[in-house]
Length: 307
Image (cartoon, rainbow, N blue to C red; front, side):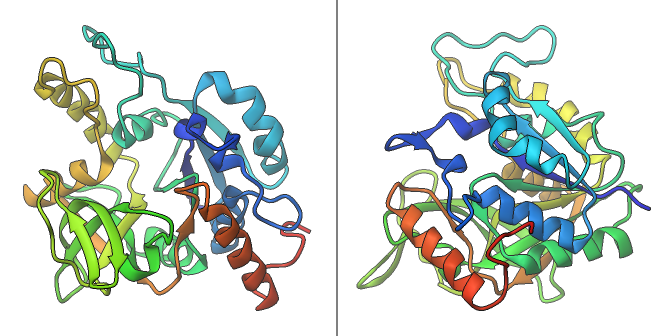
């Protein structure tokens, strides 16, 4: 059987809202957290291994809250994203506190996967459809070798990914008629107002968006060979960070967009009608709890998720 791995980026798990760690807040009736639902849906879709990307200092708590439970359902491995995990010859700039973004996070799994893998965020609920489509693409269509990286992506409808409690950042996608990604643009401060959607670009300029546009929620299906690209690109990224910039990040959407623009990657966009939800703000938690309850009422999930 082909190994297909779910990779969950949870190294940012220390970022807190209110009095708790947002990714570990219970949202299900049995104390389930958002990650439980993602893992359930991925295993149901056919994924057969889980890799958690965490920080070393959170390992004990993380294993107690979720890792030890999931080990009973599927093979589990851990990768560790740390601020000082840099290529030889590079040092952490003075004043920098956070690791280097999603590109560095995914690079930490090199050697832990054998075959294609799906990357998701720890604190996002994606719904079943994206996992199913990506797994099917990986096992039926994805080419592991070749000069062009064969990538797929779960694309959500922008209107289905907004928070009622504040602005969000999304990777807004332009897609060709045959479902191939043309570009993805990080777009900031997206919110729905009485006048419609408001948003800003990287420079802070207003941007016009359509609520029906497809957006990336960091749900990428990637071939194992892509990790070599991340490894080659990380020193180049570090070389280009301006002196004094302590917040620059090596970001997966930007890396993939650059590969698309240079003809080194082809990204199949797999659209899902499912509604995304997550705990971006403290106030979002109740909305997530209510949404999970409704999905249980509809029969999408059992009351006891892994029962």
